[in-house]
Amino acid sequence: MASDLQSYAILFLIWLISTVLVWTIFSNFRTTARHFPPGPIALPIIGHLHLIAPIPQQAFHKLSKRYGPLIYLRLGSVPAVVASNADTAREILKTHEAAFASRPQSSAVRYLTYGSSDFSFAPYGPYWKFMKKICMSELLGGRTLDQLQPIRHEEIRRFLRLIHKKSNGGEAVNVGQDLITITNNIISRMTISRICSDTEGEAEEVGKLVHDVTVLVGTFNVSDYIGFCRNLDLQGLKKRYKDVHRRFDAMMERIIKEREEGRKMKMERGDGVKDILDILLDISEDESAEMKLTRDNIKAFITDIIVGGADTTAITMEWALAELINHPDIFKKARVEIDSVVGKNKLVEESDVQNLPYLQAIVKETVRLHPAIPVILRESTRDCKIGGYDVLANTQVFINAWAIGRDPNYWVNPLEFRPERFMPSNESNPNHHVDVRGQHFHFLPFGSGQRGCPGTSLALEVVQTMLASMIQCFDWTVVIDGETKTVNMTEGPGLSLTRAHPLMCVPIARANLVPFN
Ligand code: HEM
Ligand SMILES: *[C@@H]1O[C@H](CO)[C@@H](O)[C@H](O)[C@H]1NC(C)=O
Ligand SMILES: *[C@@H]1O[C@H](CO)[C@@H](O)[C@H](O)[C@H]1NC(C)=O
Ligand SMILES: *[C@@H]1O[C@H](CO)[C@@H](O)[C@H](O)[C@H]1NC(C)=O
Image (cartoon, rainbow, N blue to C red):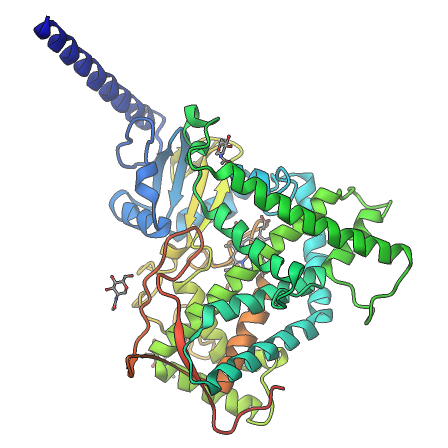
């Protein structure tokens, strides 16, 4: 009896192993038969899911060194390709732009974007095109940015006052946290005229919600990728999505109702300047508009802007400051430039930035090495050939902007922080003329093409001006146990480029402080 059982067990094991083997070989064989890009051997069921955590851009980069610039992966049951150099990025983002102009929909996205009725994740189609047009002409266009400039100006001064107060106490400041508060303020004042650094009820809620949404969108839902888990909630995420969605929706509903009542009574708001919510409500009431904006569209768009804009901008400034602390010579050179262009009696302003080429080069060099969204997410909507390989419809596409910015074929000493490479005055540098807006496919910090980042101008205004004011007004050092240290630049996990160690530093106000009150 016992030996019978044993042989059954062995038979069962053999059956199991051979099924798995055949399955693995078959699925990998199919890959080559269709002439898919190369890639590592997939495990049964999970495919390559185990290969991409916890820091996707680094994992993809390692794989590309082994398998080349276009890799085929299976994430559970979902096919995916990873593009890791400028040529494949150009083919995807430009040559076949229309085939790759959508984004994959995860369940987090569906919950938090009112069923993808937003903008960032809306499928490439008439609604997205309509929103894109008003985004560029009105919502995030030059005129709106100009009109809302006083908000940015005020918030930068608020930040400097806060840092000044802390510097008097000689305490170490978690700069990233203060920067996030300010960028949240800037974006939510520009969109809904609310501020989130006040500590009362609703205001604080905005900041908390942004954080929660970012965390959730960045959390990888295993069930999205593995077919038979579709209806399971392995990580208990659904409850969290629902909760965050409900809180956000309640807040937005309150704000919109209030605004509508004001509009009915034809109340002019204080200064007569419209925020982004006003512009959206105008469009939704416009009978002659090409498309009717629903209430969900409005709420979802506002989620997009707040979530997409605040963290990315703050994290970029945190990386920039960290690099400047580790490169005191570059910091000094930037300050000399600011002092000679702006002087010492006036705070640097947005309008000064055009005369500060070295500062601009510092920001470019920062987003080259530390793009806030290191991997650009797209999805194919029809079959295509990329680099001679087949990429079928409904394939998730990851473009590793982080790796592309470090490609030694395009960048001399790619891992070194050298703003000089972007100086327009030095024509012997191959990259002196390269801009950030996706015209050059070896430099894609804001993506490229129609689906590229619509907030680029706003982000640059904020990052450049705020960084300039931080250089102009304070010295920054990192002191641990009485010793001056360099900053640890290790990256943290997640879909945005987080820092493993928050930047804790001690600001020291300059002797002859520039007035910013
Ligand atoms: C330094 C800051 C920022 C960085 C590095 C950044 C980067 C990016 C990248 C790489 C993409 C994907 C582009 C593509 O698929 O080709 C993107 C999309 C997007 N960004 Fe930004 N961004 C920043 C700031 C902002 C700001 C301030 C806003 C809004 C106020 C914003 C709003 C958006 C939106 C709405 C999308 C989706 C566009 C679409 O799907 O059509 N971003 N961003
Ligand atoms: C994860 O994804 C699956 C499939 O899209 C979905 O049914 C499930 O609800 C998601 N889990 C959560 C917590 O949202
Ligand atoms: C211009 O760039 C080249 C190459 O990086 C460098 O060797 C040279 O010193 C630079 N010239 C100036 C004036 O900065
Ligand atoms: C930076 O931090 C990481 C852990 O996050 C550690 O492994 C590494 O040794 C640190 N580097 C330096 C130079 O201290």
